Length: 291
Image (tube, rainbow, N blue to C red; front, side, top):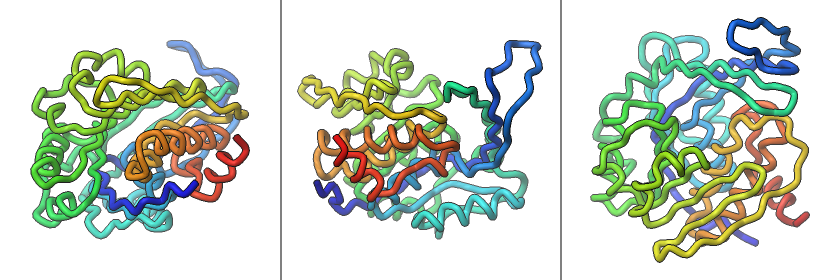
């Protein structure tokens, strides 16, 4: 299967340094537990999804901001090394975004995000607007200021660019933003929270973790891609791997794209970290070939 229908994807979103601690079990409130490991891994929903799209074969530009710190330089080079164009990625004064992640022995995690430079993406430049207008797909999440996401979606819609939204973290969203969304990618929690709003979104993909994913077409019909049996190490970033892979292959058709994305997300759970867990095309193709 060749799902490489050439796509130009602009990702507008966050980029963080993930501070990952592994432990047998996550602590209860007020409790201290011993950890078994610690590592720093570049992440952020926007950056993870950009890397996933690039590794699935799309041409990707990243719009966002890193800080003027050591993390910022590492985050930019990580995007570049994955084939993501960072020519329009800003460097701003102050710290980069960070996420503190605790992963237990089952692979489940808890995450605290501090916005840092991501919180300063409060407008869009002329070059950024031009990049959005020239893209096939604009992909956004909700880890940067909401007004900027809404402005980008509005501009994309007026320019004929497909608008894909991963509405995470969950927060109230204006009706005007939902009206501009062509494709929503949600997990079960987000699907429940936004159930009313999603009714008017033409394409909805709902991820089910290890149980796979469900695609709902504009006419309301649904189809399910079953889960894949893998040895889970860490679920951090698996949803981002899925979303980036999905938009990268969207032009091949929703059913093909969801199947591809499902394999990408499953492979990502077998590796530790967020951006470091995202598979490339060859790895996804091998996973699909195994059935």
